[in-house]
Image 1 (cartoon, rainbow over the protein chains, first blue to last red):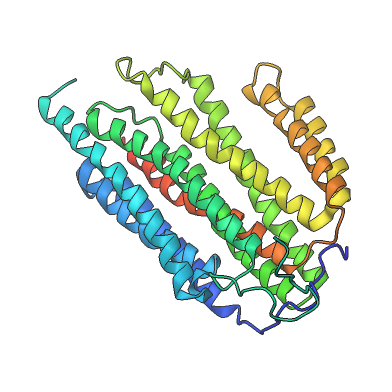
Image 2 (cartoon, rainbow over the protein chains, first blue to last red; image 1 turned 135 degrees about the vertical axis):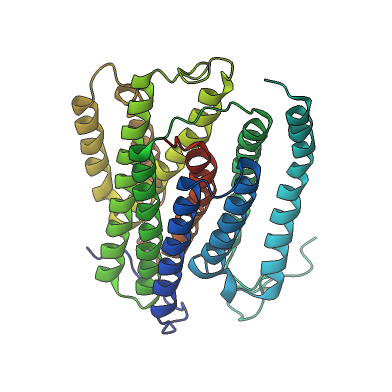
Length: 108
Length: 252
C-alpha cells in the first residue's frame, strides 16, 4: 500500500487539521439551515431561491478557500481565477430578466 | 536561432511560475474553470425554467429530501477525508494517504448508489426526459433534472475512479472491473443503470491506458490535484442540492 509517495523536493510543512474540521461542521450546519428553511416554506419561491443561492455561495467560498487551498495561493492566482469565474457566471444573469418577464405575463 | 542555450543543470535557468505554483495545478484550475462554466450554464438554464414556470413540479417528498441530505453529508464528509489525505501526502505518510483516499472513494461511491436509487424511484413513478406525471404542461422538468444531476453523477463516478488510480494504481483496474460486473449482474435488466454501469468499462479502459503510459508512483502533487477535482464536484452539488431538490420540495 505504498503507492503514493512524496516527491523529493516537495516542501513539507506541518498544517493543522483543526480548521478543516471547523469548516466541515460549518458546512453541515449551513446545509441543515437550508433544509429547515425549505421544509418550513419560510419564504416565497423566488425569495427562497435567492436565500438558498446566497447560502450556497457562502458554502462554495468555504470549499474553494479552505478545502481547495486557494487561501494559501498567491494573490495573483486568487484574483485571476475568481474574477474570471465570477464575471463569466454573472454574465449568465442576463437571462433572468426574461424569466421574470414570462412570469409577469402570467403564462401558465 | 540557437543563439541562447539554456543549461538545464543550472538552478534558476527557468523563470519562476507566474502564479507561484506548479503547472499541473494551474492546468487543473483552468479545467475546473471551464467545467464550472458548463455546470453554470446548466444551473442557470434550470433556474430560468424554475422561475418562469409557476406550476413547476414538486415531486420530492420527505423521503427524497432525507435521501438528498444524506447524499450531501456524504459529499461534505468526502471533502474532509480528501483534504486529510492531501495533508497526509504532504507529510509523506503513505499509509494514511491511501487510507484517506479510500475513505473519500467510499463516500463518493455511497453518494452514487444513493443517487442511482433516487433516479430509479423517480423513473418508476413515471419521470422521463420529455414527460413527467406531476405537471403535464411542464415537459422540460425531466430533461433538465436528468441532464443536471446525471452530469454531476458522471463527474462523481469519474472522481472515484480518478482517486482509485491515484491511490491503488494498477490494483484499481481489477477492482473496478469487479464493481462493474457486480453492478451489472445485480441491477434488474429493466433498470436504466443496467446499461449505465457500462460507463465503468470505458473508465477502466481509459484508466488502463493512463497507467500504461504513466506507470509511476503518484506523488503529493498528484494527490493535491486529484483533491482539487474532488472538491469541485462537492462544490457543484452545493448548488444542485438546494436548486433541484429543496426548491421542489413537496410539502403536505
